[in-house]
Length: 438
Image (cartoon, rainbow, N blue to C red; front, side, top):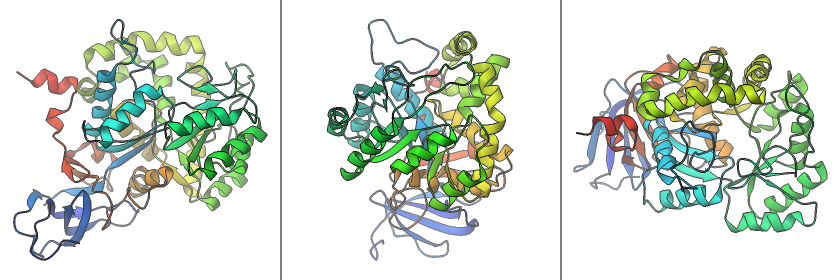
């Protein structure tokens, strides 16, 4: 709490607070921030300590910062339209611009679910040492799979050897201190994807136990129900995707809800791939032009359709869409813990993820909780992040319009606050800002 007479760092005055828990909006509140944390939430009529910087909240809405619970940051071979500059293996500038794109739309925390450790952990170190402005970065580094399976040797995934040699790979991962370790248990064998070997359940169980005993949280790519059941039986903490390849059984959906297992939504990545095959012009929006730039949009329009067609994903993902979306809707209805996630590296796509959830009939207040407190639960950090409560980190977004009335109002951003500091959105490294610089 603020000590009597002492100035806070920041006061958002006379604002309507939407705290991220799914509860009703509370008007007429002043939120005080001190040392990067929420110090007080008080009636607007109460005095603000002298010398405190004020941010006018009258007529506006304060929410927790959004959390994207599944991204893959560009810069080291992840999908984007533009190639890295010649001779540049890791494009840190592109990675920073992508992080700024998330921050621009109010995403104040991201979890990278598989990447080149030389990229993602350097960016994490720079963010945590305040060498750069960025969302909070949580990362896995290498995703761990089975030789010949999904992500083994691609997207910086690693195929692990059999147990007990697996421990050597886990120890190497532990040395770089993943926040959450991503595990991949995917045998494919449907649609355009041929059957591949998958991480054996016995090895998965030993890996999860080994990591858990060393204090490392786990998430798993497991998009078939029987596989998802196996990873949960192994003790995995979260699911990196919903069940995708078929309609999930009511029994499994209810189990996820009963156990309160956080599940990342990842709808937008599927819709984006479908739309690249139908009309690649969808990506050319004012917000994407501002965040991505015209050159990258043109490159994605040129490369995206043939890329996904060659993989067979355009038609396959369209076939999967009814099952994926219905599984998400039913998990919400059952009381499950859905955490908003894009599986991408494009900040504006987060806003589309929110819209897709609304199109399933999920109330905006619930979507806000999914995008904030549930995201923190996915990270295992609900005691620190995800809601507006005294003592929590002051990651906040001030909006001109009420997102609990219409989730599209998430785009009406008045201010972004990360760790108690106002973000200068006009100074972020984005093509739209650079174009505006004389």
